[in-house]
Length: 549
Image (cartoon, rainbow, N blue to C red; front, side):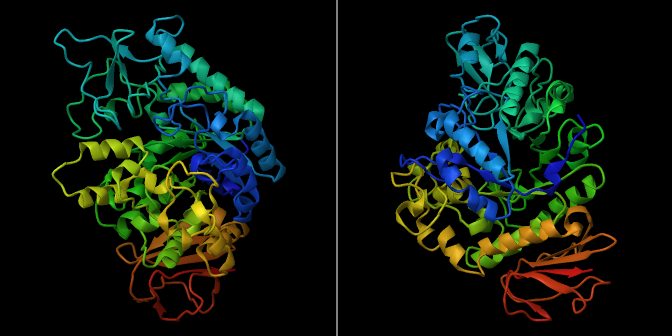
């Protein structure tokens, strides 16, 4: 089947289901709640949804530990609610992509339970290793969440590999039976009408033969032996050839530590195995490699991340654009200013929504939700956060340890969506599974709806413009004033249209800088963050978009 690249004309909205909207009052967001908000999502201009996992799961990693790939968890409403949402989306001309997590399963999955008992054909569905004669672990790899990547299993009498939580054993993708299981899962959801998949850490699925020790990297120890492993392209090609090519669908790869050059091996439109890639560089403008190693925000680093991917994929592959998702803290708290919440939120929106690619908006991003700052570490649910706190220096003052969590925890982006100023922010009539951010009285969707100059309405205008202007979809990208630490200025050009985006990231007034060849007086100001503007000066976090036709 020839690929219909419909995703190039879309804007997606990512839903973290347990925190989006509770439809039955049990405190947990569910698909009935999603169904009630489809028109709200459509009103943003979004025409697709990406669901984080909604499968049955013990919840060791908030659903990324899957116990059954072909069902919907009862707490989310089961298959009945899922079909209702799928039909509701398709009836509105919208698409749905699912989270596909096949690097690992839950240790409560039937496959693992049978594998640990050596029941055929599941014996080698996972990566098992015996004890070494010297008592050492099979290798020195570290998991991304919990200490060593190896866990002893008393039932089998061997170690199993887990690159993430202990309850997330890695599948053995070298086993052809496992790959057939993946194809069965893909067909199941595509036959139901799902429109594609976001594929979790998909570049990890092939490990280096022999699983050698890693003697080079002090952090992410072992990753160089399993990220972009020896058979990853072979296996992805198999999934594409045998399943995906037979459906009108799209695929989105999650890929830590990947460059545009490496990405093209996966998403090149001529011979790639997938359609788009989630890169991590745009999440490292205020940290080193990971949110847990924070640095001061650098606009130059953010601009470089955007530009490297815009230039690197031009004419070869298609960018996925984002600022927030479920794995990182809130972007205004990181890259913007909580003191200038609305205006810095607008600057961030303009900075990425007019780039070339398919934008993704994470729930609550469009209303300017901020990082959560609980008073007790016990209030956090995230396994990564809990382990970080447990391993942090107990001699540090509690306030300092808490600030580390406030700044870096994934739960900062997982608190319930703030719909209005009623109890529990209108998220639930019950007790929310994770506390609501205390600022919900001031920051909520209802308040944003009432204010014509709100961040929410800015997102609506920006999305409408990017869909109406060919220069945003197809225009050439060029960055200006690359060395500026306060201004992000870029253009998008086709033969018929020219667009100029100007964003200030300063908390003081800034002199406007206009690239050579652009005359603002002859251009049409089509989007602005402030109602009162100056010809020569930008207010703090002011953003503007000009058009020439």
